[in-house]
Amino acid sequence: MARQPRAVFGGLPHLLSLRVQHQQTLAADDADRAAALHLLSDSMRSADVLMHAYGLDDQQVELVVTPPSAEVLSRAMQGFARRHAAAFNRRHGRRGSLWAGRFEAAALESEPWLLRAMLRVEQAPTGGWRGVSSAAHHCGLVADARISEPAVFWALGNTPFERDQRYRAALSEPLPQMWRASMDEALRGGWPLGSAAFVARLSEQIARPLSRRLPGRPRSAAS
Image (tube, rainbow, N blue to C red; front, side, top):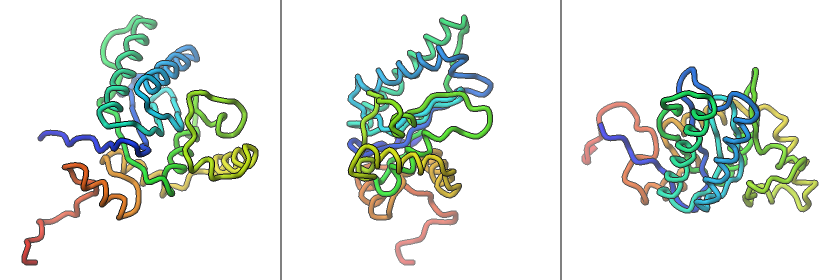
């Protein structure tokens, strides 16, 4: 069966996930993590993909981005994966594939899913996490030139202090499991996250289903 086209829409924010193969790692030390982040940032910037949040641990990369088009995002992610694997293999004297297939993507309706996706990406997973993220930038601790702030972040407050304080408070709370599960499912299926009207608008732009089909036989036109 031919795989469905990835549901990516130019000018809309998306949650992305790219994982390494089982028992592989994308970073063995801090130098690897810094190199991966540099390659990721360079790939996004060169393609004019706006990066709103990033999180890299030893097993996966998760991003919140706004691409100019589906084709541009695909090329940017493929370029990053190829360059990173080549550099990692060269440094560690290894050969073979590193990444576990294609990246996953879910288009986001800005309210409320964009901010939720940023929190997901920047919250460290529980247990033995080693990685880097853009959390320090959004908490006002550093200025990260890689980040392009979306309007929903600016709406958190009238001053940088207010925005940073409110984001820091949200980041300190565990992400509700219902939100995380919805995002996991959307990534696996390539479903958009948003209202019914949002999904309906996107459905007019792509020749693939954008929601899970209910089990059972299709209804006839007369039913």
